[in-house]
Image (cartoon, rainbow over all chains, first blue to last red; front, side):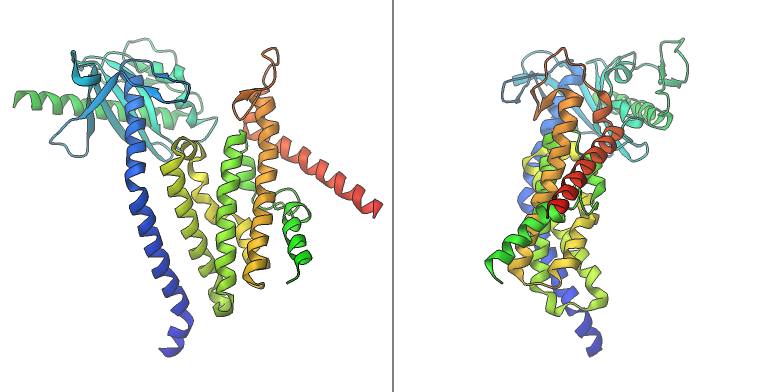
Length: 201
Length: 203
């Protein structure tokens, strides 16, 4: 026992000290990191609903919208009501966060029209797909395909789409394209259901 | 330890034992994130911070290190400092930390840091180890930045996002892709070897 302690005391002491140091770092940066994420979600939500985001010369985003988090019974779903800044005027739309797995965790933000009938934009919030292959889901051309009616689940096809609800997969990135399409379908389906049942109550 | 020894320990890391251009270690970040100068600089600085801190701590506890537990202790120390650096980047340089993606946490397994722990920090005093960390860290930052300058200049016409080359210059897309990293690294290592061999002949 004594011999064992002699060998491991340093590891134990170091673990304790480092654990405390990490806890302190986490505490002192937590709020700022959360604010950064919220800022990013707001920027992407504006891109996905209004369609543009102007930045001043310092790179600060000039917001036209603000977000109000929706209280939904489905706690796994994160969705926001997108309102004009100051709350003046009609609702701009909704922003939903979809989560799924491509080759790694993927997070997307989907913009929806105020009546939930149309997808107004798709933005990639977090992705670690392969650069040059799966990471091309970030490209404008691929994402623009998702701006269409939200009435019917989207279908991924490998050749030129013939019907309106079809989206063309990226060559060499089928798994990532499939993941995005599935995430959009799930998130849109869930949020429509949740908001409609909220409105009834 | 005399002053001249400290100076040579410092310059050693900058040139004679430059991690990515001479020792050819730490290749993963060297190839992966040098597509822009800003990425390269941030990565170099983060690695230098971790290297200096881990060298210092390892050197301070070196007399207590059990030979068979040393790698475990190194990993513990390095992982702690990397996590601190990662959180700091996320809090204060959010967009940068997003563009570096998983490469910041990957500093934990950067062999430059483990190599310096074995070669220097586990054997020498804290002052020498600190200076060694600074020298090697700066050498690493320098080589990353050099690659970043070449790749960003030809791949995106700019340096630190300021356009340098005229619009009439067609950007070489290959330079921002992984293959451009290999090409640039090969050419730069070739140049460094040429300079070193010429120096040897003169001496």
